Image 1: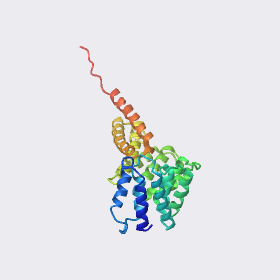
Image 2: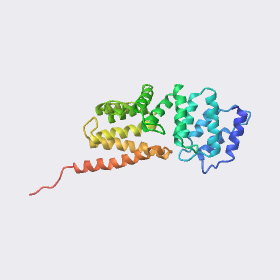
Image 3: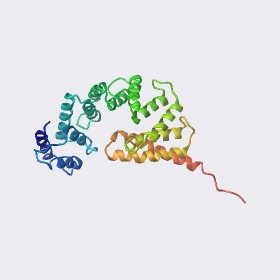
Image 4: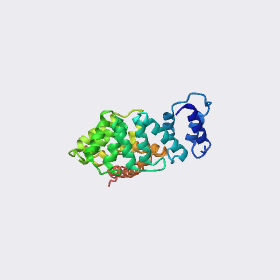
Amino acid sequence: MNSRRLYRRLNDIFSKISEEDYPEIYNIIENELDFSDEEVYEEAYNIAGELHEADGTKILPACVANFIMEVYKEELKLGNVNAACDIGSLYYTGRAGEQNYKKAVEYYTIAANGGCRQAQENLGYCYYYGRDIPVDYEKAFHYFALGAFDGHLRSLYKIGDMYRNGYYVDKNEAEAFYIYMHCVDGLNEDNISIVGGDIMMRVGDCFFNGVGTEVDNNQALKYYQLAEQMFYDRLESGDFLIKNCYKHVLENEEKARQRLIDALPGYEWTK
């Protein structure tokens, strides 16, 4: 998409959206339109990616969703397999107006076959949970392993889940706990906001239930509280997929707290 055409498309979208309803999208486009149509713009694919993530608590306006999808499909024709992963995520979440796991798997597979690690991880989730395809733990493990080898902590903790539950591999709770703790060690400022809550919740569960380690309610409460804040931040930004995890953490926090209260020594004495 050349700069002149991109300018016209963005200008058209800008005329159709409200700053009050979509402040992030509005500001992104407004910043791009600060230049004249003769200027060289940032590539359309990068702009589409910004719009894809903007105002994450809401369904994308149709004009924005159509623009993003058009850009992604153009990029895919040019050989950008990451664009196939992007299209798959739009169908997976339904942010573009249509949630369709079958189409998500179709595009994730295109991207995964092209070597896109994120798409491979996403396919792992589709096979693990049976997203409009039969559950297949062997394929899920295969795709999670590819992601884990490339440093994706979300893939790694899902392998921990498979050891914890005995899915495809022999059940080994000690191995699961070791993997989760390894994920904790791998957290940094770049990934903690994305996967930190999921990891902290799993470690909290291990200490709470004695999975691969001794029950330790102090440690359980500590990790649950860390997970709570991280999940809250993600929910606030529009990641509705983790709302059940957030509820689970809050419920187990109260249970762990009650266990600690019940274990306090008595202070009654008689003369």
